[in-house]
Length: 319
Ligand code: SF4
Ligand code: SF4
Image (tube, rainbow, N blue to C red):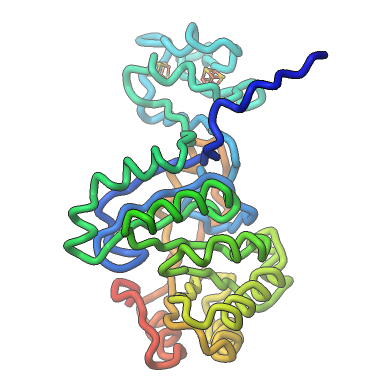
């Protein structure tokens, strides 16, 4: 086979994002635009963004919005892969996940917005153009752009290119990471990050594996290296407080002890478990693993908050 010598269409690395939220007031100072990237190495049982897991576009189908094959059924003819299931009994619609390749052909045919593809490819200049729409709010409030996910640092070529562009254009940058990425990815990104949010979930390796699907060694090693190699970095550690996993002084204590041994950490925040993501599990045909779990009580959160060393900031709405 003869290979083409033609240069690639574009040398710009593209990224896969699934949401852009404007005017956010958390996840960094001031008013912020949050950009969520697709793909994550963890599978935390409490995850509120299950649409972030897979590094490919993904079809979501909201059966509550669908008006059914008897009144509509436009998606059936639109799908080139015969991936629409129709109930013979009542004409209700479902997705055959074994056939659906998330091509998105059905989405525009749906009059009730029951179909949505999570995942759009953008280049860094294209994303910059999107976030710069809010530049007036950033400059007035001291805000900027925050990359979350998923795990943004998995898409390191795209992320470093985008962060560099932000810095060249005077935008404040923040990144949220689960920490389970190669150290070289962190090294590449950190010079263009103004504020890094780093999750620490448990120091108990077996428990960590059981609830997130991965061991914690890489995460803790990366945090130690960040603290020793980048002592000037603005670094907030976030601890999710998850019932059955770490919602006790006995589980939080060793985390705090570990963090106290890392003097470069400027802030520690507790992130209480919530259930806002459950609907999304349904639209992706996934079971929600913490169906019977309820959020931690204010009284418990108060006890855990008091374990955090004074001088570290905590989110006001947590308590
Ligand atoms: S995303 Fe593509 S394959 Fe999946 S149901 Fe829609 S049209 Fe069919
Ligand atoms: S096009 Fe939309 S509303 Fe119509 S049957 Fe298909 S999913 Fe339901």
